[in-house]
Length: 246
Image (cartoon, rainbow, N blue to C red; front, side, top):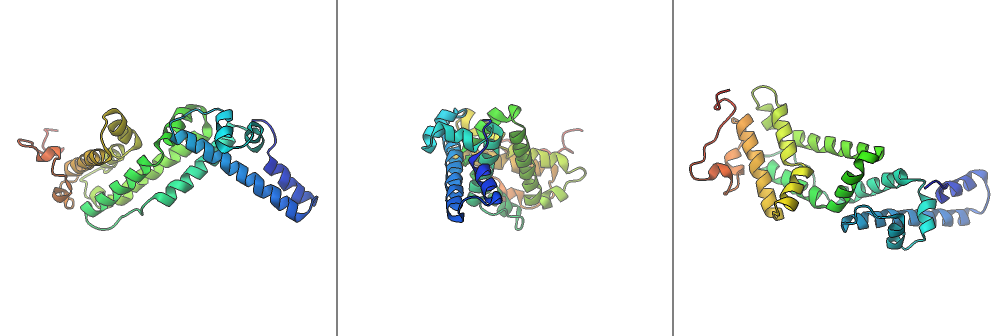
């Protein structure tokens, strides 16, 4: 994708004072519509499970010519930048607020609702990004930023429990981060074939178990556990790092 973009050319025309304002505005509007159509087409194809669509596939889905894809995006990285930005906008609009106040159970409930939305929102787009990540500096940075943001949400949602840890809080933070991560969700939903409700219950049970283990004095973990959690099974015993001989 080495051609100069139409958008850049149109902007140059404005700077040089050529053409009428109305015609320039029209070209810019059409160019923006075409760029949006191409980006949305890529995201739509990814969401359908088409993880590595060709430029021809994208053009057909967008309803534009193949040349338009190359004209509006200099290379794949430029398209990834726009698609990442667009996906982020769509996801942000769908997300419930982050809850950092209330009881452990209330915060855990809100945290899980938010994570389900994140993980179930166009999972094909995430899979496509992971597939391309080793070869794209843009996607490497986008995904790294996303992982850091999700870890920060763990710290915000479970600040009282982390503060209650006797010693280093990082093992608990890492454990909750992994339990609620996209990779864990993918394993539960795709490879273990769990429903959304069952996968959510599993993640909940893991988080509750981790908090009980590292911060046993924190909050209302007894009421936060689901009825069928492993800790409630007949004969089950609970252990903390102090109980296991270490």
